[in-house]
Image 1: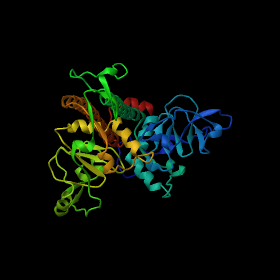
Image 2: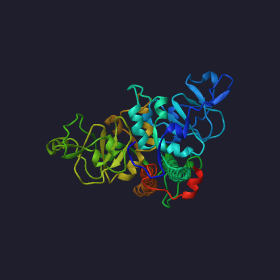
Image 3: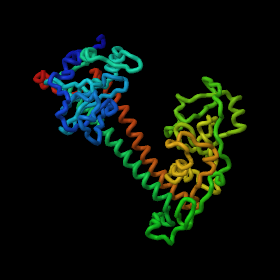
Image 4: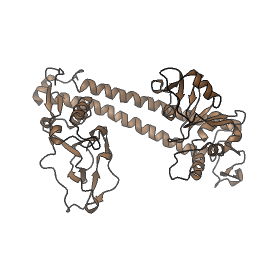
Length: 431
């Protein structure tokens, strides 16, 4: 490799750092009763997900072959572009990997986590891409895996690099866990708020089972007596979808939004499509989005919602529905959250003729039944969800920063561009 390295680093082939499918690697036999089985769907970008249950030998796929031990690094050799790379650091329960993996066992003096991070690097991704054969089922052979070149520092620096990247990974995992916890709390809160609501003191009403006198029957089941129900079309000025034909895209012009453009909290202008002002004017004769409207994805990915909180002009594709609430009847924020609730989704699934909902028709959207709370209660409920969403968005922002930090650290630390602080004497003893 031509890239320069620090003076005490060397380019080493992977098989100098690790045994590839070590000779003593056990091959599963009928004598095994049950075991966990890992295939390439179980690993991704350094993370390994063990199956919940063991399988008996007789039910194991024919490719279940390699028995793992703690510390082994798994590198997928079939479809390596999927980056099914991970480290096995779980219990000593019998675990078997598919032959679709190369099993890397760190040699003496080599840090196994350093091997994992090295094979996850862009350096290895580029080398693997050059060795892959086949298009429908791309793969890299074991001989080429052995020859993959790793920029290798002394053992002390390997350990320090692995420790730093492991620390960032742990922070990423904790942040992901916080997001999952908040999402779970939000789901539970949605159920409570859209079945019980909150009283004038901001407290959840007792459930129907505890206080049936506070409730009345409705199309949605038992609801608080203060609530009403209404069809969505009765609460809106307009429910319409975007253009049903693909317009002519331009390099510049008026933004043209599709489902993919509303999947994140903000619009990514680098990926937007644009149409001419003339075509936009024609499309707005039928569908003219404006601030305060709600956009709902209705084809392909169902149920994504976004309130239009900007003033720039744009048009939309057929995969998006425009919902314009009558604000004197219903709070826009409240309606957006209600359209994400189990009460709404139960109606959508009931109307769908398929097990998986892939399309929503405008008529189905118009006929959705909405629980209409008193105006102040709508605001209180909307405020609860807005606060929760802000917390989740903060965690997601933290997660994005950590992921960027890890990417930068891997590039800097695994190439020697940034040196880690390790006692040189300790490095000399390790060598």
